[in-house]
Image (tube, rainbow, N blue to C red; front, side, top):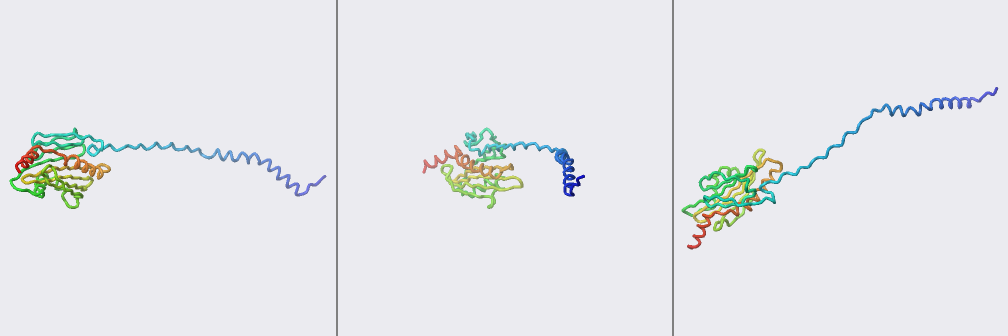
Length: 232
């Protein structure tokens, strides 16, 4: 009987075991895969919808201006979103309007005096009769002052002011003018607490100062200025 060498017997034993374990070796990965829990992918996130902020009715570049008039005093003023303005009750020399959508107000006034008036005196009367104006009369609130010659025959000053009150941004544009024996005042107040309030308020001030306060017409004053020039 042929006696196999130790090396040969070990080789055969190892080969037999390899053949026996081979199916297990191939089956094992499959078993491991089957044991891994199946995780579902999260659904894709819905795209974030971008909503464009609604245009401001008073400072929108495409806003249309229209003239509004008042019989008493012969006032005629150009307004953005003219239908959104409501004429308030007249008080003294003042013609006032309010714009509910933007929490804004306009005052126009003209009065006469028997002596020569200075711009400062005209401004004091406006501040005294319009208390809301005083909130924006501190030196820190006013950020622009411009000398103007309007209405016709008047010399005056146009100023812009802005201030913060709690969560609201306030803005004021005011035109005060004087001539011998007469005063003229045009005041615009507005406020906003929306996102981008500061920018909205500053844009409103710029538009109303440029296209409303400085273009207002007052028949009684213009007629008197015209008569005075004729007699000079």
